[in-house]
Image 1: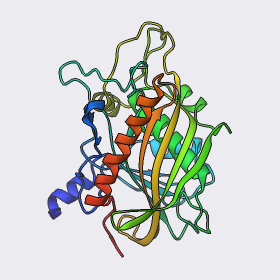
Image 2: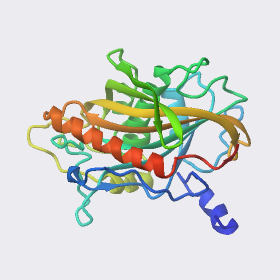
Image 3: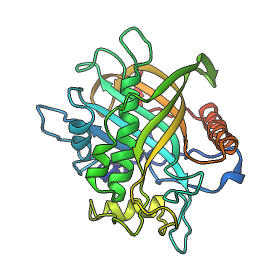
Image 4: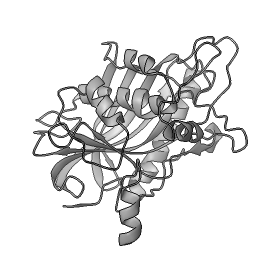
Length: 310
């Protein structure tokens, strides 16, 4: 980026930088018959926790969401950076209505995309999502799934905090399996992982309880990005808990991080999701396969990777 534009963009809320770009090619479906997608127009970057002695001195996310997630979900964890480029159901340009908040749709509470987690080596002895001997750390991944749905997505969208909080604990019902311990996609090897029964809050609003304006600017923005939906007959409760299934490809490396200004462990995740309560199971699995096929195309074309010195 040019120095002037780069300096101004880096101080804007939620703006991250991947591959030296703040705008990034979004994830897409391989099969367009499942519906149109939308995305936030830049890489989203959130510092989870505090950088120095519990004082956050980072300007990319001026909201307290990173510290909120640290307190509610990652208590005891050192600082790490969450980066994402995601896609979800496209809202109507005219009405703003989408199926993201429609409990009858296969898109209900669904998004998919690219993630990068940066864990500074001065504070971490292992990569995020992995144990010190390189095995999958499912607790990290369940926690970040809860953080992503409950807070980074739906709390910012306007879901009351009490509903987010009650869905934030790991229930013990979750199931995790390694689908493929070593799959090569593009120039890298990944572990393919599937996780089921992850309970998270949804953004559905009935006539029962209403969305709230958690953030003056960003809540309306998030509702515009994800889209809204009117109440649906037969669904009388707002903010329904959904059971999500995720499948993703994950790997890590180590390098100098330009934001942290030190070496960091960098974990890369390409993941899709479906709502397990959608009644047509076969269609739902095809929908997930379409997400993953589109992600693989992106992985081969341009790996999602923060600009760093290797």
